[in-house]
Amino acid sequence: MRINPKAKVTCLVALAMALLPLTHTQARALNDEKPFAEKHVIMQVSRGDGARQGLVLDIANNLAKHYGGQDMVDVEIIAFGAGVPIVFADNNPNQARVQSLMAHGVRFYVCGNTLDTLERRDGDRPELLPGVETVQTGVAFMIDEVDRGYTHVHP
Image: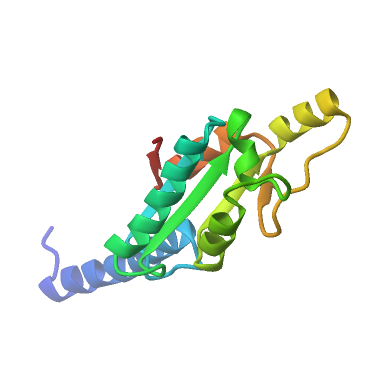
């Protein structure tokens, strides 16, 4: 059986057009807020030392500079374990830097399980900086983001 060349081309064009929206949807699924971002990065803060936390904040800032601005790179920071003080509203030496990065499109997340543990241990839940989102399990959130296409960076 011989296929008409015009029918073959028509089928290929129809197939390509059907797949095109899927590719666009997958790219947009990374982060609708940054449609022009070519790189998607998730960094973890899981240690409490100030030097390590400062390094994460430096890297987030440097990525925006390197890739040509905040709209060209999508950066998320997940804090869990001993790293959660980076998003505390009180006694946080990094508060101004975190808020500045948030104002420039960096999203901060904190592990709800860690907050639950701190609340049980200390009797109250720490207050977070405005705009920080709580996820139930920080490590699982990070893994899911990597599965969605984010590059994991652990300074």
